[in-house]
Length: 388
Image (cartoon, rainbow, N blue to C red; front, side):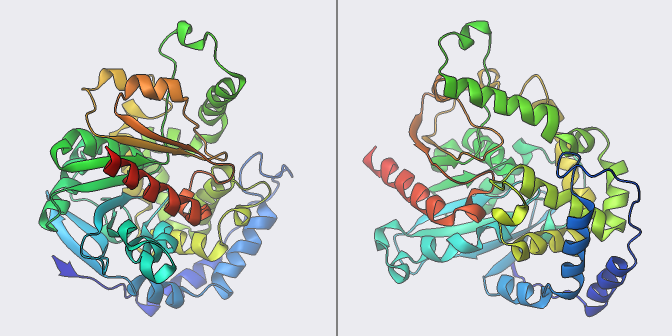
């Protein structure tokens, strides 16, 4: 394992500013708010701020304030943060982002989770945190070959935790990170103390499942259906033609910006603009990492690799097709999530479901939107595991 620091050449930042200044903006777009995607006036203003107001060097310094490493597993470079707690008995936990995401999503939770004593908490709640960039994402860079599906990544994560000397640990994730954490539960059950998710897809298996559903559970099913119908355009494109999408994203920073920022409006709890849910500098750091590492195309490959299990496929949420899940499972739900699971469906699929929480605020990017709730939830899950 090699220590790693981010050091983007100034020439790359100058090139970004030049491209932003030379953007060829579309004309003739009808005014439609956010209904047809990112509004033109909003994107122009955000792109101008990215060019002249946003400070990448400050973001780079913040990232470099955390211990970072790279290692090669199964032929792929894996970048990760490894932040050990000062508490010797801290619980190891690997946290995985989704798309469009990065390790940046977890900045606000790192300090309180690794050093609760310094943040007014109970030192018994401490965690050692491992936060990787998935193959194809950010500073992990493109994988050398195809075939990086959830099963293969789960085996890589198990190997990573083994190399770090963690024999017993928790896995946590949202979005793709949730699917990967579940896959880790199947791949490395003997070493997992528990799996905690802030994204879960549940589906009715037949019409009998729809009998006697509460209004709330019916609304959850309808919310998932709205995602498939209206909010999954990027998923449909990247799961079928990831290469064709990659060229435009890799060549146009404004194209990359629109591709990502739309998700913080549609998937976060953001009534009017993405900044209602997430600080714009955080969003721009995530976009900048995609741009500066040229991983728009590489990150999209995951959609293609797991197309048969995406929410737009018939196999989505079909946990009955998988082997029994034996690891204790916890699920946190937030009102702004694109998928809100139905508890009785989850309990049927996962008899080891031992922890369930419901919150009145927050969305798809839980650690970014509501870090305090996220922190309290993973602590509560860990305590539940201790109780047995």
